[in-house]
Length: 179
Length: 179
Image (cartoon, rainbow over all chains, first blue to last red; front, side):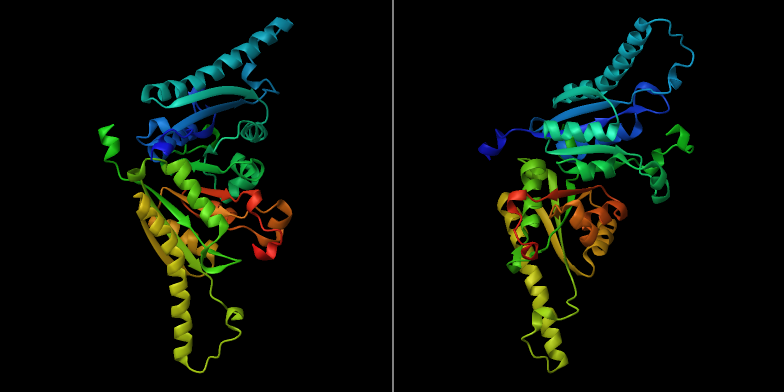
């Protein structure tokens, strides 16, 4: 097994996002679920055999809804806004990176801006991980028709294998708006 | 890590089928690819951390094409045919089980008869593995329209996470009939 032990670690790309309930910098239930699943079911005790690549895609806030109470008076204000968003995203990634360091699993993390499903596929095809893990809200067939799913898109458009980890039903908020 | 080390192994259900070119008892290129992927990317050196569950679904040979040269004169002949099919399937599974024993990975293997996609989902929901791995021929979008894919069906209907491992493009036979 000597040859196997010095083999390059298995590189797992994990797309993570913020909680819709708590907002930044809190990770969504499904992102944390996917992360816990990777650690308990894949990495297990073999912490040196894997490297986790955390990608957070920020959606451009086109309607500015989150900033209804802010006043923008100069180009500088917009730069501040973008910088603040980026900082929030970094704190989101901090949760995952800190946890990896605590248990001794190698990792990298970065932020991209754009449409999550397209950016995730683009990044998957760029960094060529061994596989891609996505947290999923586990929508039923009826909801899927309207919402679509990132995982379905990635299964079709990412070059690497994709696995979607559905959140436990017990963790689904009663009101989908809180999801 | 003591608690982790005595934790139950991660149970991976792997659906395997026979080679369309060589027939029984040879495993298909995509089944062997999925198996190799699990060993090199997931199990790695942690052989005691995983248990592989091999499922082979035999499709009832409704048109009897494979038996064009046989003569059936009695009910006993049909029993012989079914027994022979089952034996062929067992030899297919032998390949995977033998390999697991050689490297010290726990496994189980069994055969079911029916429509592969439906049986795979049924078995996944019955044995509740941590995830399901499917070898995939990696059809393009055009081919998918006509052929459909087992993995798309399983992603929708299996309760557990599903990962499809596409065969290397270099291993695709030139003539799809040989696939």
